[in-house]
Image 1 (cartoon, rainbow, N blue to C red):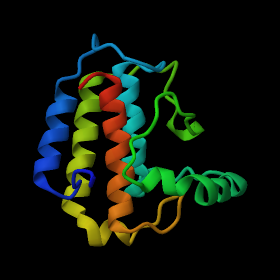
Image 2 (cartoon, helix red, strand yellow):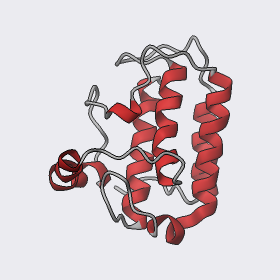
Image 3 (cartoon, one colour):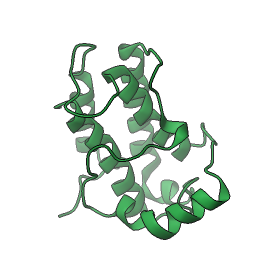
Image 4 (cartoon, rainbow, N blue to C red):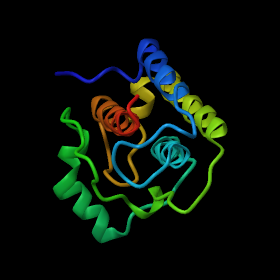
Length: 153
C-alpha cells in the first residue's frame, strides 16, 4: 500500500488539519512526550531535510542506521510504538508553545511540498545518506503520521 504523497497539496491539507486539531490537553496514547514536545520533535526531521539542523549521528551510528535500519525507516510499514529516539530528536523536559510549534511544522510541510520530489531527492539525509524521492516521502510521512496517531489525530 503506497503512503500518501508528501509532495501533493492534498496531503499537506490532510496533515495540516490533523496538526491543527492538537491542543495542550490532547493526551498521548503512548510515549512520554506532550503535544508541544511531539510537534517540536517532528520539526527536527524537516529541519534536517532542509539543512536547518545539521546534527549528524556519529560515524558508527550512521553506519548502523544505513546498514540495519534504513530499509525499515523508508518502507511503507508504519513504525511501532515506543521505538528509541536519537538524541537530536529528544524534547523531554522542555516546554514548547504548541501554537508556535504547529505553525513551524505546518510551514515545514508546506516547504517540502513546494520543494518537490526532484529537489528533495537531491539532498542527502544526515543519517541515511542518499534517498530517492519515494524514500524521503515514506520517511517523512511515516514519522509524522506515527506521532499524530500517538495523539489520536
